[in-house]
Amino acid sequence: GFTLLKEIYPLKKDIFVLGITGPLGVGKSTFIDKIIEKMADDFDKIGVLLCDPSSPLSGGAFLGDRLRLKTKNENIFIRSMATRNFPYGISPSLPFIIDLFSASPYRNIIVETAGIGQGDVSIKNFSHLTLVLLSPLLGDEIQFLKGGLMEIGDILIVTKGDYDIAEPFYKTLKSSISIFYNDLIPVYMISSSNGFGIDDVYNEIMKRRLDLFSSNKYLEREKIRRLETFKYLLRELYTKKMIEKIEKEGDFKEIEDGKVNIYQKILDIIS
Ligand SMILES: Nc1nc2c(ncn2[C@@H]2O[C@H](COP(=O)(O)OP(=O)(O)OP(=O)(O)O)[C@@H](O)[C@H]2O)c(=O)[nH]1
Ligand SMILES: [Mg+2]
View 1 (cartoon, rainbow, N blue to C red):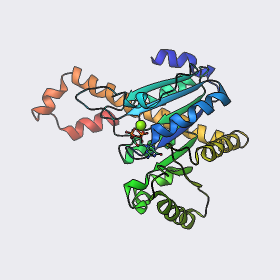
View 2: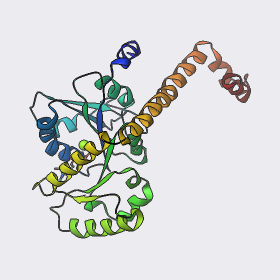
View 3: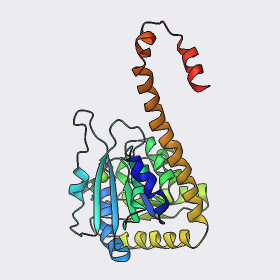
View 4: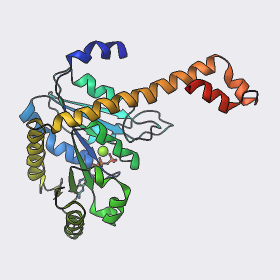
């Protein structure tokens, strides 16, 4: 896999990654279903990567998300990826799959995180624009401010606007946000079931996308993405290789039996 990635790295073109995150069941996939056709009209080819939390028992993605995305458009490539036991709310292969896409015709990508918790904030490192979805059914919006999830949002979206409690939730959220962030972060309310607000959010995304490419903001995000991809690969692959190597050398047994000073061993490895 990495030999191929090495070959295509110089062929990379600009890619736009829209990250979509938010707690489980907030309406991420349903929202994506509402905007992908519009995106495909605007950009021809669209890639959708859905990070599914997966049970260690089934070992794979449940593919439930793929069922929620009803499109039959051939220009939309949809793929579910298991997060397995990976704690970051994204699939372990996401960072290099984005690089793979950047050498393909699919250079407008939507990524949905698994929505499993604080690890989902890692999507920020790999996307150019991040949407944070919040549901009025989830309760105290101030909790989200504490959770760190809202801090990564370029745009905040209150979902399920067709519920009566959505409007007061949205208003409270909007005023807390304007106190904390001086109105710099737009807050929208949508309903994927009756279509309310979807066009407004879509137009905002397109405006922000244009703004990224016509300023140095895109390059700033790319700098972050490159470095984070590198550090990520190093962390994930180098550590794994190292553990395998040490196991092969038979040192695990000695560590188990207490024959090796594990702190000395670590010092030997990292020095
Ligand atoms: N009433 C109402 N229900 C909605 C709306 N959007 C989504 N839902 C419902 O909420 C449930 C969860 O929606 P999903 O789109 O699967 O949410 P998700 O965030 O992708 O969920 P996970 O991928 O499991 O984290 C589904 O039953 C949807 O039909 C909405 O705007 N209004
Ligand atoms: Mg989903």
